[in-house]
Image (tube, rainbow, N blue to C red):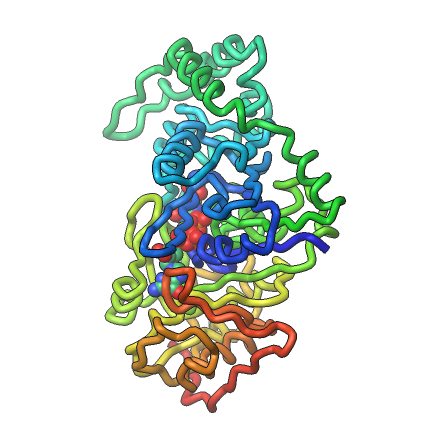
Length: 449
Ligand code: GDP
Ligand code: IMO
Ligand code: MG
């Protein structure tokens, strides 16, 4: 069967971009099916660094068709900026990229609403969104009456549509008086229409019915790689609501976002960092607001790709990742950034939570329970070796084998790919057929934090 998915199992930034770039060579299509310019995917190759938000990470390779489907929300200015950046650095985009005419378009009012509304959650803290208008654009999609899709930009009534929506949005936005702040300036329908008409002309060569293209592809045995954005714990339905993004970022989103039924997918790779990170608000039970967290942030260069915010860091949470591996139907695991753990005497993996005195291994559905969860850790030996030169499993020290074995055991899936640095080359592939067996040493302790 022709479909492979790469799904982040944590709170995003698991190094999905690196993995997708590597796997692109084995595929004919690379597909983004949800999220938008909130994603920041990094690919490092030959000393060059590429940061992609909307365009699939497969674009850097030749001979592959990159597709942005209708499940994505598309900010045309971001897309054009990215196309220009790629072409100015010698990457061909024309003829290699398709944008769905079903994609919902991000407009300035979405960005304004995002910035006005975040932080107004009743009784809770701010979500800490990326401020890219993602939630408001998805809200209008679901609401329908104020939504504009990419295909609508080419219709004769586009100007009337803009007038209608701007009239409504101006009433809403200008009546909003944040405490201590000023209401936003009214939107100018004519200026927005002119700007988006220009964007539409620029993007015209890329626009297509991508659902039809992808259905033809899978029915003809072409190999399709689905590139998840964000991580499954940020999934709108199954994540740590309300501290989530506004799309299905777990494996459940592939079919709805792309239009390709799940029956065409035969390989689901769950991507995890060797530890946990989170940007923005919401609980992170294993967070280390101490020297360990600092070690992870500095060695892992844990600063947001999109917003440059420092990422919150903590120990690997096996309760959370086991839940999302099951939720996404993961067959195998890619463990990324393993090198970052080097230099720590001991490592901890959260194997259960204690919530109100009860020990649980099932990920809580309610945010209040997760907020009260105290991690129960299994302690494993660390290593001092620099792993960045490792290219085969035999190059890894026994403590690293033990750590990978523990992750594999807790999640109930084999670890088939290990990453030890940002570059394409810094990757260890384990023979799936032979099933590299990671040796697990005896745990040195287990206690509530
Ligand atoms: P994505 O959003 O899941 O694609 O991940 P990001 O690109 O936002 O964040 C991952 C970061 O880790 C990027 O800066 C990558 O260059 C970097 N990276 C990827 N793999 C490794 C690795 O194995 N080790 C280290 N040290 N960095 C890595
Ligand atoms: P990639 O694809 C990490 C987080 C934001 C915020 C929440 C909602 O690079 O893994 P949004 O702007 O989507 O409404 O913000 O989701 N978030 C991400 N965190 N990586 C991402 O993408 C993210 N995309 C959104 O920080 O907490
Ligand atoms: Mg990222």
